[in-house]
Image (cartoon, rainbow, N blue to C red; front, side, top):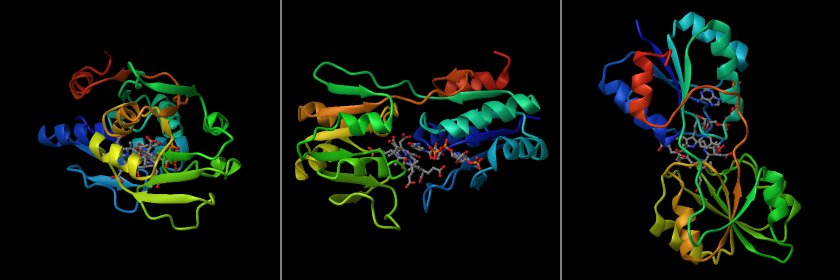
Length: 246
Ligand code: 3Y8
Ligand code: NAP
């Protein structure tokens, strides 16, 4: 009997969850518990880590899952790595549901880097006004360049005080739109944008806004994760679920 563990936390995961629920397929949606009030899902939902690859292995066994779909964010490298390890150990088929990386288009002014530290290094020395749209887990590295004013977009109000001296905090969950991001960047006189190459539509608005405003974007490339089959659409995932060997 099919029973699916859906590792979520992205727009793609929410879309797949709706399809699985509508098809009446037995599935569990999983959040890490990063945000205070994650969006509700139409599937039974668990929140919190599994306790590493070993914890996930135990969970897969005790809960009798027949498939795992990793629809986490491309930067959730630890979760994806653990899923590859745990699924191999218990011989449960795994596929990723992942959106392609964004590609620079005509008129884009992207500076590519492959790490957060690379993004810090790519910022100018002269004081700038930086839209740091990478969430809150990697802010500390930017304290190396305190001369800039940072516009931070976070999902929840920051609990502790921020590691940066000059900031404006925008609390928003996304998905975002171009008009909203353009107005936001104009309002704050933004001169540079820092983004993770999340792909997908949920966070692409700031890139279109940057192009329209002729602003440079420091684009952080995706971390490497171990190989597993990658599906690019709900239909491909549903087909894989019927024949996981494919
Ligand atoms: C907890 C679930 C949906 C999901 C929406 C997508 C779209 C908006 C783009 C910007 C970039 C950022 C951040 C972002 C995006 C969607 C999607 C996506 C980027 C939620 C969610 C959870 C998280 C975790 C959160 C991280 C943070 C990253 C904010 C829910 C809203 C910046 C990544 O406060 C924290 O600790 C936040 C942590 C991981 C990255 C970071 O390092 O801080 N996402 N985001 C998931 C869980 O607990 O398992 O709360 O409802 C999901 C979404 N985030 O259903 O439509 O699919 O990409 N999320 C980045 O790309 O740089 C925002 O502001 O332009
Ligand atoms: P990560 O660094 O790859 O994972 C760190 C630990 O968090 C994992 O080892 C696991 O804990 C737990 N975890 C991560 N995703 C989980 C999930 N869906 N269900 C249960 N446990 C999970 O992950 P992250 O980058 O912090 O991302 C956390 C969540 O935010 C994910 O759902 C991801 O899809 C979402 N998200 C992340 C980003 C981003 O920029 N990283 C952007 C948008 C959304 P254990 O080791 O204890 O099992």
